[in-house]
Image 1: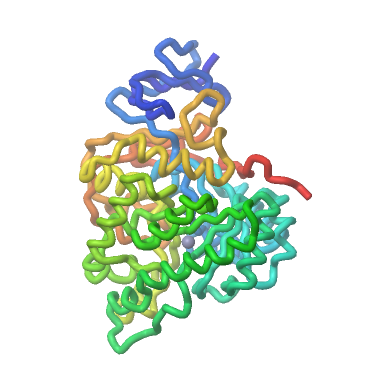
Image 2 (image 1 turned 135 degrees about the horizontal axis):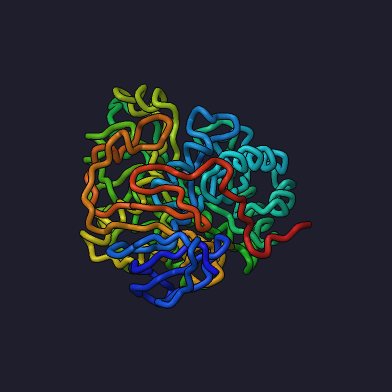
Length: 453
Ligand SMILES: [Zn+2]
Protein backbone atom coordinates (compact mmCIF):
# COMPACT_ATOMS: atom_id res chain seq x y z
CA UNK A 1 0.00 0.00 0.00
CA UNK A 2 1.37 3.41 -0.91
CA UNK A 3 2.23 5.91 1.80
CA UNK A 4 2.15 8.97 -0.49
CA UNK A 5 -0.02 9.77 -3.50
CA UNK A 6 0.32 12.90 -5.63
CA UNK A 7 -2.91 13.39 -7.50
CA UNK A 8 -3.97 15.23 -10.61
CA UNK A 9 -0.68 16.86 -11.56
CA UNK A 10 0.76 17.11 -15.05
CA UNK A 11 3.54 14.53 -14.83
CA UNK A 12 6.52 14.91 -17.13
CA UNK A 13 7.27 11.28 -17.90
CA UNK A 14 9.94 9.79 -20.21
CA UNK A 15 7.09 9.01 -22.61
CA UNK A 16 5.68 12.54 -22.51
CA UNK A 17 3.21 14.31 -20.29
CA UNK A 18 0.14 12.91 -18.59
CA UNK A 19 -2.37 14.36 -16.13
CA UNK A 20 -2.52 11.55 -13.62
CA UNK A 21 -1.49 10.26 -10.20
CA UNK A 22 1.74 8.89 -8.85
CA UNK A 23 2.06 6.59 -5.84
CA UNK A 24 5.06 6.25 -3.55
CA UNK A 25 5.94 3.50 -1.13
CA UNK A 26 8.99 3.63 1.08
CA UNK A 27 10.43 6.53 -0.88
CA UNK A 28 10.17 4.74 -4.22
CA UNK A 29 7.71 5.31 -7.07
CA UNK A 30 5.40 2.30 -7.10
CA UNK A 31 2.61 3.32 -9.42
CA UNK A 32 1.75 5.84 -12.10
CA UNK A 33 -1.83 6.14 -13.30
CA UNK A 34 -5.35 7.01 -12.31
CA UNK A 35 -6.02 4.00 -10.13
CA UNK A 36 -3.25 4.03 -7.55
CA UNK A 37 -4.24 2.44 -4.27
CA UNK A 38 -4.64 4.50 -1.11
CA UNK A 39 -5.44 3.70 2.51
CA UNK A 40 -6.36 5.75 5.58
CA UNK A 41 -2.78 6.60 6.43
CA UNK A 42 -1.80 7.62 2.92
CA UNK A 43 -0.52 11.21 2.60
CA UNK A 44 -2.20 12.84 -0.37
CA UNK A 45 -0.86 15.87 -2.20
CA UNK A 46 -3.31 17.58 -4.51
CA UNK A 47 -1.26 18.63 -7.53
CA UNK A 48 -4.11 19.73 -9.78
CA UNK A 49 -2.93 22.69 -11.84
CA UNK A 50 0.71 21.94 -11.08
CA UNK A 51 3.47 20.38 -13.14
CA UNK A 52 5.30 17.42 -11.58
CA UNK A 53 8.87 17.29 -12.88
CA UNK A 54 11.50 14.76 -11.90
CA UNK A 55 13.58 16.40 -9.16
CA UNK A 56 16.55 18.34 -10.53
CA UNK A 57 19.87 16.48 -10.56
CA UNK A 58 22.31 19.40 -10.37
CA UNK A 59 25.63 18.03 -11.61
CA UNK A 60 27.73 21.01 -10.53
CA UNK A 61 27.72 22.64 -7.09
CA UNK A 62 30.38 23.81 -4.63
CA UNK A 63 29.47 23.69 -0.93
CA UNK A 64 32.99 24.36 0.40
CA UNK A 65 32.75 22.14 3.47
CA UNK A 66 34.80 20.84 5.23
CA UNK A 67 37.37 23.60 5.53
CA UNK A 68 35.46 26.62 4.25
CA UNK A 69 32.03 26.08 5.76
CA UNK A 70 31.67 29.83 6.29
CA UNK A 71 31.50 30.12 2.46
CA UNK A 72 28.29 28.07 2.40
CA UNK A 73 28.41 24.54 3.85
CA UNK A 74 26.32 21.44 3.18
CA UNK A 75 23.28 22.44 5.18
CA UNK A 76 22.89 25.93 3.69
CA UNK A 77 23.72 24.61 0.23
CA UNK A 78 21.15 21.83 0.33
CA UNK A 79 18.52 24.16 1.82
CA UNK A 80 18.99 26.18 -1.36
CA UNK A 81 18.73 22.97 -3.36
CA UNK A 82 15.42 22.11 -1.69
CA UNK A 83 14.07 25.60 -2.41
CA UNK A 84 15.07 25.24 -6.05
CA UNK A 85 13.48 21.86 -6.75
CA UNK A 86 16.90 20.20 -6.68
CA UNK A 87 16.73 16.72 -5.19
CA UNK A 88 20.25 15.51 -6.00
CA UNK A 89 23.48 17.51 -6.10
CA UNK A 90 26.84 16.40 -7.44
CA UNK A 91 29.36 18.32 -5.40
CA UNK A 92 32.73 19.45 -6.72
CA UNK A 93 36.10 18.51 -5.20
CA UNK A 94 37.41 22.03 -4.82
CA UNK A 95 36.78 24.96 -2.53
CA UNK A 96 36.39 22.56 0.36
CA UNK A 97 39.60 21.90 2.26
CA UNK A 98 41.07 19.39 1.94
CA UNK A 99 39.99 19.16 -1.70
CA UNK A 100 38.59 15.76 -2.69
CA UNK A 101 41.78 14.50 -4.30
CA UNK A 102 42.45 11.60 -1.90
CA UNK A 103 40.34 8.84 -0.38
CA UNK A 104 40.84 10.37 3.08
CA UNK A 105 39.49 13.70 1.84
CA UNK A 106 36.49 11.90 0.33
CA UNK A 107 35.80 10.31 3.72
CA UNK A 108 36.09 13.66 5.49
CA UNK A 109 33.60 15.24 3.09
CA UNK A 110 31.22 12.29 3.26
CA UNK A 111 31.22 12.53 7.09
CA UNK A 112 30.00 16.13 7.04
CA UNK A 113 27.64 15.67 4.10
CA UNK A 114 25.97 12.65 5.71
CA UNK A 115 24.98 14.63 8.78
CA UNK A 116 24.17 17.92 7.04
CA UNK A 117 22.53 17.31 3.66
CA UNK A 118 18.78 17.73 3.16
CA UNK A 119 18.87 16.24 -0.35
CA UNK A 120 20.71 13.34 -1.95
CA UNK A 121 24.22 13.85 -3.25
CA UNK A 122 27.16 12.40 -5.12
CA UNK A 123 30.75 13.55 -4.78
CA UNK A 124 33.16 14.46 -7.55
CA UNK A 125 36.80 13.55 -7.09
CA UNK A 126 39.56 15.78 -8.38
CA UNK A 127 42.46 15.30 -10.79
CA UNK A 128 45.44 17.50 -9.89
CA UNK A 129 49.10 17.20 -10.96
CA UNK A 130 50.19 14.92 -8.11
CA UNK A 131 47.26 12.57 -7.41
CA UNK A 132 47.01 10.19 -10.39
CA UNK A 133 47.87 7.37 -7.99
CA UNK A 134 44.83 8.24 -5.85
CA UNK A 135 42.28 7.92 -8.65
CA UNK A 136 41.56 4.17 -8.19
CA UNK A 137 40.86 4.64 -4.47
CA UNK A 138 38.56 7.58 -5.22
CA UNK A 139 36.75 5.55 -7.87
CA UNK A 140 36.32 2.75 -5.36
CA UNK A 141 34.76 5.24 -2.93
CA UNK A 142 32.17 5.97 -5.61
CA UNK A 143 33.00 9.40 -7.03
CA UNK A 144 30.71 10.39 -9.90
CA UNK A 145 33.63 11.67 -11.97
CA UNK A 146 36.94 13.51 -11.75
CA UNK A 147 37.06 17.28 -12.10
CA UNK A 148 40.13 18.96 -13.48
CA UNK A 149 41.20 22.43 -14.58
CA UNK A 150 43.11 23.41 -17.70
CA UNK A 151 43.74 26.88 -16.20
CA UNK A 152 44.23 28.30 -12.72
CA UNK A 153 41.31 27.20 -10.52
CA UNK A 154 41.38 30.35 -8.41
CA UNK A 155 42.25 28.37 -5.31
CA UNK A 156 45.78 27.40 -4.25
CA UNK A 157 45.07 23.88 -3.02
CA UNK A 158 43.64 22.70 -6.37
CA UNK A 159 46.26 23.13 -9.06
CA UNK A 160 45.52 22.91 -12.75
CA UNK A 161 46.90 20.24 -15.05
CA UNK A 162 48.93 20.70 -18.20
CA UNK A 163 48.69 18.62 -21.36
CA UNK A 164 50.75 15.64 -20.19
CA UNK A 165 48.97 15.11 -16.88
CA UNK A 166 45.61 15.70 -18.54
CA UNK A 167 46.31 12.89 -21.04
CA UNK A 168 47.48 10.53 -18.28
CA UNK A 169 44.48 11.46 -16.14
CA UNK A 170 42.01 10.86 -18.96
CA UNK A 171 43.53 7.45 -19.60
CA UNK A 172 43.42 6.58 -15.89
CA UNK A 173 39.81 7.68 -15.46
CA UNK A 174 38.82 5.79 -18.62
CA UNK A 175 40.36 2.62 -17.20
CA UNK A 176 38.30 3.15 -14.06
CA UNK A 177 35.13 3.49 -16.13
CA UNK A 178 34.75 7.06 -14.97
CA UNK A 179 34.31 10.42 -16.66
CA UNK A 180 36.55 13.46 -16.49
CA UNK A 181 34.90 16.85 -15.96
CA UNK A 182 36.94 19.65 -17.44
CA UNK A 183 37.10 23.39 -16.83
CA UNK A 184 38.13 24.36 -20.33
CA UNK A 185 39.86 27.73 -20.66
CA UNK A 186 43.30 27.88 -22.18
CA UNK A 187 45.70 29.80 -19.89
CA UNK A 188 47.75 31.01 -22.86
CA UNK A 189 44.77 33.03 -24.05
CA UNK A 190 43.72 34.50 -20.72
CA UNK A 191 44.69 38.09 -19.98
CA UNK A 192 45.49 39.82 -16.72
CA UNK A 193 44.10 42.86 -14.93
CA UNK A 194 43.90 45.92 -17.14
CA UNK A 195 43.99 49.61 -16.29
CA UNK A 196 40.20 49.50 -16.47
CA UNK A 197 38.93 47.54 -13.47
CA UNK A 198 35.29 47.43 -14.46
CA UNK A 199 33.32 44.21 -14.97
CA UNK A 200 33.90 44.17 -18.72
CA UNK A 201 37.68 44.03 -18.21
CA UNK A 202 37.11 40.56 -16.72
CA UNK A 203 35.11 39.54 -19.79
CA UNK A 204 37.72 40.88 -22.22
CA UNK A 205 40.49 38.99 -20.43
CA UNK A 206 38.71 35.65 -20.82
CA UNK A 207 37.62 35.49 -24.46
CA UNK A 208 35.60 32.76 -26.15
CA UNK A 209 38.79 31.87 -28.04
CA UNK A 210 40.26 30.60 -24.75
CA UNK A 211 37.33 28.24 -24.30
CA UNK A 212 37.56 26.97 -27.87
CA UNK A 213 41.33 26.44 -27.67
CA UNK A 214 41.03 24.49 -24.42
CA UNK A 215 38.33 22.22 -25.80
CA UNK A 216 40.55 21.51 -28.82
CA UNK A 217 43.41 20.73 -26.43
CA UNK A 218 41.17 18.41 -24.45
CA UNK A 219 40.24 16.55 -27.64
CA UNK A 220 43.92 16.10 -28.45
CA UNK A 221 44.53 14.70 -24.96
CA UNK A 222 41.56 12.33 -25.35
CA UNK A 223 42.93 10.96 -28.61
CA UNK A 224 45.74 9.14 -26.85
CA UNK A 225 43.55 7.72 -24.09
CA UNK A 226 41.79 5.10 -26.17
CA UNK A 227 38.18 4.57 -27.13
CA UNK A 228 36.91 4.41 -23.55
CA UNK A 229 37.92 8.00 -22.82
CA UNK A 230 34.94 9.99 -21.56
CA UNK A 231 34.94 13.73 -20.99
CA UNK A 232 32.39 16.24 -19.84
CA UNK A 233 33.04 19.94 -20.39
CA UNK A 234 31.57 21.95 -17.53
CA UNK A 235 30.01 25.41 -17.90
CA UNK A 236 30.40 25.89 -21.66
CA UNK A 237 29.70 29.59 -22.18
CA UNK A 238 29.56 29.95 -25.96
CA UNK A 239 28.06 28.39 -29.10
CA UNK A 240 31.61 28.27 -30.47
CA UNK A 241 32.62 25.92 -27.63
CA UNK A 242 29.58 23.75 -28.25
CA UNK A 243 30.40 23.55 -31.95
CA UNK A 244 33.76 21.96 -31.11
CA UNK A 245 32.13 19.48 -28.76
CA UNK A 246 29.37 18.54 -31.16
CA UNK A 247 31.79 18.06 -34.05
CA UNK A 248 33.78 15.67 -31.85
CA UNK A 249 30.63 13.86 -30.78
CA UNK A 250 29.74 13.30 -34.43
CA UNK A 251 33.14 11.65 -34.86
CA UNK A 252 32.18 9.16 -32.14
CA UNK A 253 34.07 10.75 -29.25
CA UNK A 254 32.41 10.34 -25.86
CA UNK A 255 32.19 13.98 -24.84
CA UNK A 256 29.31 15.92 -23.30
CA UNK A 257 28.59 19.55 -22.51
CA UNK A 258 27.08 21.48 -19.64
CA UNK A 259 25.95 25.06 -19.64
CA UNK A 260 24.69 27.11 -16.71
CA UNK A 261 21.62 29.26 -16.09
CA UNK A 262 23.69 32.41 -15.61
CA UNK A 263 24.98 32.22 -19.19
CA UNK A 264 21.35 31.90 -20.34
CA UNK A 265 19.87 34.55 -18.05
CA UNK A 266 22.42 37.36 -18.19
CA UNK A 267 24.48 39.38 -20.64
CA UNK A 268 27.51 41.64 -20.25
CA UNK A 269 25.18 44.61 -19.80
CA UNK A 270 23.70 42.87 -16.77
CA UNK A 271 27.19 42.18 -15.42
CA UNK A 272 28.08 45.87 -15.72
CA UNK A 273 24.94 46.79 -13.81
CA UNK A 274 24.96 43.99 -11.19
CA UNK A 275 28.71 43.72 -10.64
CA UNK A 276 30.73 41.20 -8.55
CA UNK A 277 27.91 38.79 -7.66
CA UNK A 278 27.86 37.85 -11.34
CA UNK A 279 31.61 37.40 -11.70
CA UNK A 280 32.44 33.88 -12.82
CA UNK A 281 34.78 31.99 -15.15
CA UNK A 282 34.23 31.68 -18.04
CA UNK A 283 32.65 35.13 -17.81
CA UNK A 284 29.14 36.24 -18.68
CA UNK A 285 29.05 36.88 -22.46
CA UNK A 286 27.35 39.43 -24.68
CA UNK A 287 23.66 39.21 -25.56
CA UNK A 288 24.35 37.72 -28.97
CA UNK A 289 26.32 34.87 -27.43
CA UNK A 290 23.62 34.32 -24.82
CA UNK A 291 20.99 34.08 -27.56
CA UNK A 292 23.25 31.72 -29.50
CA UNK A 293 23.51 29.49 -26.44
CA UNK A 294 19.73 29.39 -26.24
CA UNK A 295 19.60 28.26 -29.85
CA UNK A 296 21.97 25.41 -28.98
CA UNK A 297 19.98 24.44 -25.88
CA UNK A 298 16.69 24.36 -27.78
CA UNK A 299 18.26 22.36 -30.62
CA UNK A 300 19.42 19.66 -28.20
CA UNK A 301 23.13 20.36 -28.57
CA UNK A 302 23.67 20.89 -24.83
CA UNK A 303 23.60 17.74 -22.69
CA UNK A 304 22.99 19.03 -19.21
CA UNK A 305 22.37 22.22 -17.28
CA UNK A 306 24.17 22.66 -13.99
CA UNK A 307 24.05 25.64 -11.66
CA UNK A 308 27.79 25.84 -10.88
CA UNK A 309 26.55 27.18 -7.56
CA UNK A 310 29.76 28.59 -6.09
CA UNK A 311 29.15 30.90 -3.14
CA UNK A 312 31.67 32.73 -0.97
CA UNK A 313 31.56 35.08 2.02
CA UNK A 314 29.84 38.38 1.24
CA UNK A 315 33.10 40.26 1.73
CA UNK A 316 34.77 38.25 -1.04
CA UNK A 317 32.22 39.77 -3.43
CA UNK A 318 31.81 43.28 -2.02
CA UNK A 319 35.57 43.93 -2.07
CA UNK A 320 35.31 43.86 -5.86
CA UNK A 321 32.80 46.71 -6.10
CA UNK A 322 35.37 49.11 -7.58
CA UNK A 323 37.82 46.57 -8.94
CA UNK A 324 36.25 43.44 -10.38
CA UNK A 325 39.59 41.64 -10.20
CA UNK A 326 39.42 41.67 -6.39
CA UNK A 327 36.11 39.75 -6.25
CA UNK A 328 35.75 35.98 -5.88
CA UNK A 329 34.54 34.37 -9.09
CA UNK A 330 31.45 32.23 -8.60
CA UNK A 331 27.68 32.59 -8.86
CA UNK A 332 25.26 31.67 -6.12
CA UNK A 333 22.48 30.16 -8.19
CA UNK A 334 21.28 26.77 -6.98
CA UNK A 335 17.74 28.07 -6.41
CA UNK A 336 17.40 29.64 -9.81
CA UNK A 337 17.92 26.89 -12.39
CA UNK A 338 14.24 26.02 -12.80
CA UNK A 339 12.98 29.61 -12.50
CA UNK A 340 15.41 30.68 -15.28
CA UNK A 341 14.44 27.79 -17.56
CA UNK A 342 10.73 28.36 -17.00
CA UNK A 343 10.88 32.13 -17.46
CA UNK A 344 13.47 32.54 -20.20
CA UNK A 345 13.01 29.10 -21.76
CA UNK A 346 9.46 27.78 -21.48
CA UNK A 347 7.62 31.10 -21.46
CA UNK A 348 9.95 33.24 -23.59
CA UNK A 349 11.38 30.78 -26.12
CA UNK A 350 9.05 27.83 -26.44
CA UNK A 351 11.22 25.35 -24.56
CA UNK A 352 9.21 22.27 -23.65
CA UNK A 353 8.86 20.89 -20.15
CA UNK A 354 10.16 17.61 -21.54
CA UNK A 355 13.36 19.45 -22.52
CA UNK A 356 13.59 20.92 -19.04
CA UNK A 357 13.27 17.46 -17.48
CA UNK A 358 15.85 16.01 -19.85
CA UNK A 359 18.46 18.73 -19.31
CA UNK A 360 18.06 19.10 -15.56
CA UNK A 361 17.32 15.55 -14.44
CA UNK A 362 17.39 12.65 -16.88
CA UNK A 363 20.55 13.48 -18.80
CA UNK A 364 22.71 14.35 -15.76
CA UNK A 365 21.53 11.19 -13.96
CA UNK A 366 22.44 9.14 -17.03
CA UNK A 367 25.79 10.79 -17.64
CA UNK A 368 26.93 10.28 -14.06
CA UNK A 369 25.62 6.75 -13.58
CA UNK A 370 22.64 7.50 -11.34
CA UNK A 371 19.93 6.45 -13.79
CA UNK A 372 17.38 4.83 -13.46
CA UNK A 373 17.30 5.41 -9.69
CA UNK A 374 17.44 9.17 -10.28
CA UNK A 375 16.38 11.53 -13.05
CA UNK A 376 13.00 10.28 -14.26
CA UNK A 377 9.47 9.60 -13.06
CA UNK A 378 9.29 5.84 -13.58
CA UNK A 379 8.20 2.96 -11.37
CA UNK A 380 11.10 1.75 -9.26
CA UNK A 381 12.91 5.10 -9.22
CA UNK A 382 13.35 7.23 -6.12
CA UNK A 383 10.34 9.45 -5.49
CA UNK A 384 12.09 12.76 -6.21
CA UNK A 385 9.89 15.52 -7.57
CA UNK A 386 9.76 19.25 -8.19
CA UNK A 387 6.19 20.57 -8.25
CA UNK A 388 5.84 23.73 -10.28
CA UNK A 389 3.29 26.48 -10.64
CA UNK A 390 4.07 27.45 -14.23
CA UNK A 391 2.25 30.77 -14.20
CA UNK A 392 3.12 32.18 -10.82
CA UNK A 393 4.96 35.48 -11.25
CA UNK A 394 7.25 36.37 -8.39
CA UNK A 395 10.25 38.47 -7.49
CA UNK A 396 13.30 36.86 -5.89
CA UNK A 397 13.70 38.70 -2.57
CA UNK A 398 16.47 38.36 0.00
CA UNK A 399 14.16 36.60 2.45
CA UNK A 400 13.79 33.71 0.00
CA UNK A 401 17.53 33.28 -0.61
CA UNK A 402 19.04 30.38 1.31
CA UNK A 403 22.70 31.19 0.54
CA UNK A 404 24.71 31.97 3.67
CA UNK A 405 26.27 35.10 2.16
CA UNK A 406 22.94 36.71 1.34
CA UNK A 407 24.34 37.47 -2.11
CA UNK A 408 23.06 36.30 -5.48
CA UNK A 409 22.83 38.03 -8.86
CA UNK A 410 19.28 36.71 -9.16
CA UNK A 411 17.99 38.84 -6.26
CA UNK A 412 15.41 41.33 -7.50
CA UNK A 413 14.77 39.38 -10.69
CA UNK A 414 11.17 38.68 -11.64
CA UNK A 415 10.37 35.14 -12.67
CA UNK A 416 7.34 33.51 -14.22
CA UNK A 417 7.16 29.94 -12.97
CA UNK A 418 7.86 28.83 -9.41
CA UNK A 419 8.87 25.73 -7.49
CA UNK A 420 6.09 25.19 -4.95
CA UNK A 421 7.16 21.87 -3.46
CA UNK A 422 10.24 19.63 -3.52
CA UNK A 423 10.11 15.96 -2.57
CA UNK A 424 13.14 13.75 -1.90
CA UNK A 425 12.46 10.02 -1.63
CA UNK A 426 8.85 10.68 -0.72
CA UNK A 427 9.54 13.34 1.89
CA UNK A 428 8.63 16.98 1.34
CA UNK A 429 11.78 19.05 1.93
CA UNK A 430 10.34 22.37 0.71
CA UNK A 431 6.80 23.65 0.39
CA UNK A 432 5.29 27.09 -0.23
CA UNK A 433 8.38 29.07 0.66
CA UNK A 434 9.43 27.02 3.68
CA UNK A 435 12.32 24.55 3.83
CA UNK A 436 10.87 21.60 5.73
CA UNK A 437 13.62 19.04 5.18
CA UNK A 438 16.04 18.08 7.90
CA UNK A 439 19.82 17.80 7.89
CA UNK A 440 20.90 14.20 7.57
CA UNK A 441 18.06 13.11 5.26
CA UNK A 442 20.31 13.23 2.19
CA UNK A 443 22.10 10.07 1.15
CA UNK A 444 25.33 9.45 -0.72
CA UNK A 445 24.83 8.13 -4.26
CA UNK A 446 27.40 6.12 -6.15
CA UNK A 447 27.40 5.57 -9.89
CA UNK A 448 26.21 2.24 -11.25
CA UNK A 449 29.07 -0.08 -11.83
CA UNK A 450 31.53 2.00 -9.79
CA UNK A 451 34.11 -0.64 -9.29
CA UNK A 452 35.92 -1.34 -6.11
CA UNK A 453 39.55 -2.30 -6.61
ZN1 LIG B 1 32.36 25.02 -10.64
